[in-house]
Amino acid sequence: MKIGLISDTHDNLPRIEQAVRFFNRNKVDFILHAGDFIAPFSLNPFKYLKADWLGVFGNNDGDKQMLSQKSSSRIKEPPFFLTFDSRRIALTHVFQELEADIVIFGHTHKPEIKKTKDNLFINPGEAGCWLTGKSTVSILDPGSLSGEIFYL
Image 1 (spheres, rainbow, N blue to C red):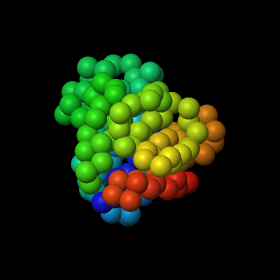
Image 2 (cartoon, one colour):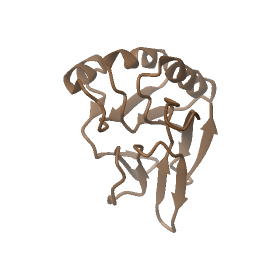
Image 3 (tube, rainbow, N blue to C red):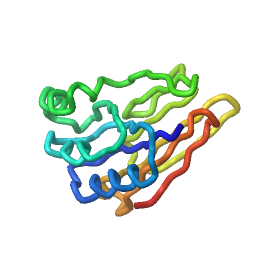
Image 4 (tube, rainbow, N blue to C red):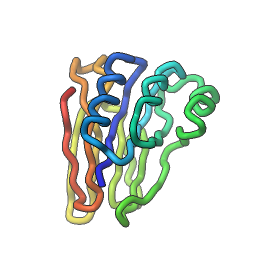
């Protein structure tokens, strides 16, 4: 199974559209967004995803009610837990030590993958490209407890 990871899109529609094309081209099975969508209009490109998705709110998401409504309640309060390939996954915005095999987070805008003996921590970086000038996403393989960062 391949899970696309994205975070900190910050209303940058051209970069969000680029990430959607990347995920579709790579045939990911599901997409997780680690927060900071910002405004409800930034969800428009997500309707072109060929896989379903979920996300969590970030610290800069303003109109949570409209974001929730426009996403058909796909955006949850962090941390949000789910299971893929028998792996417990925690999706959050700001890094936290959580009881999970895989912790996906954002907030720092810095892509990072850290693996310990039993856990994987992934920050896909910033898809929005505002802070670092680099737009990044990640693909996670929960079964093999591995991930990879991609520059868009």
